[in-house]
Image (cartoon, rainbow, N blue to C red; front, side, top):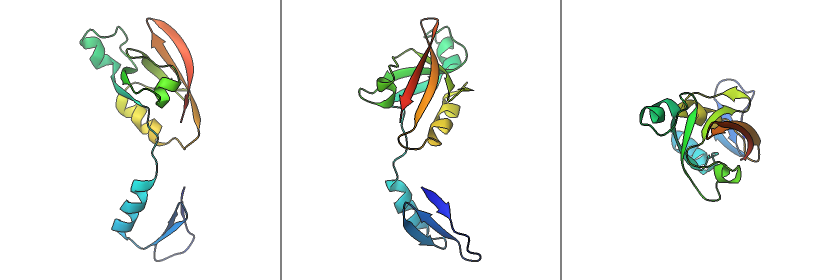
Length: 128
């Protein structure tokens, strides 16, 4: 968790209980590198690009490539060639947009998604 103090003048930031005073970039980078970032556990690409290559008929959404065994995507039941179309109730149209939404997820949060498999729309929950 990152929070900003109410002090004025010198910035003071508390990251997971560690106080950083001023713009101590090396300390900030060290602390931030230890914070676990949520990962989908699957390679993804824009569905439109994969449709051009003949790998899917879906032209909107995020195409799922390789799924990491035991990862979040695997736990949610996603398979290669699925196309994710919503994330937390929001339509997703690109892999970059999905990655940005995943970056905002907090640990232990569950996110509902909708995906298309073989032309049929399904619902699942990603257990981050």
